[in-house]
Length: 240
Image 1 (tube, rainbow, N blue to C red):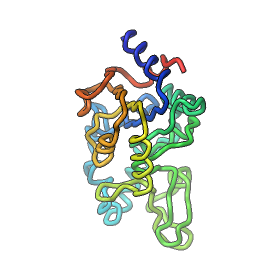
Image 2: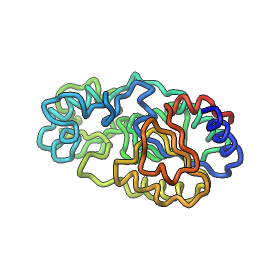
Image 3: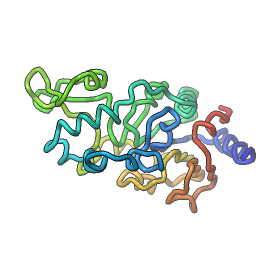
């Protein structure tokens, strides 16, 4: 393990353009449950499967049930950034990291200080009225009851990408541009099973592919460095 950490530090010290691509494992150390691990939301029992609840069709057909689950399980507003979030923000501030690309919707990267963040699946911190476009923050959504409506009578929808919806074109374009221009790509806290987000790493043409994850991923065979560990523990040992 120490040899791998040393190699990681050597790679990052020489890298001219490092990009980070992260998933749910980045936030689990902050107490936010993921969806596919043994203790993830997909393995808990609800009236409907989470995949169904977090779909575009379900949001419009059973909005009250959607919001009950959304407030209970998706609005983890007391969660705080962990060592990985803070180190990534520090790396950006020092000019060692050009972008964070995340599948998470919790906003913890920004809370830690990261500026150039591409949120592939949106954010719980942005919610908009479908009628007039008025913005509502996550605290408003958490404290509201039942179906969330705007003062104009319009339905409020979280700015998160639900199953059945397309990723934001501008966010995807920015992520592709960042990945394709990187000489070092760190993939952390994701098993790379969620598409189309996971497919974006196909645009990487750099020389250092680093994977940090507790389980195997679809890109392990292509990795120049593979560390099976919690990402916060690894990032806590980065010397930058």
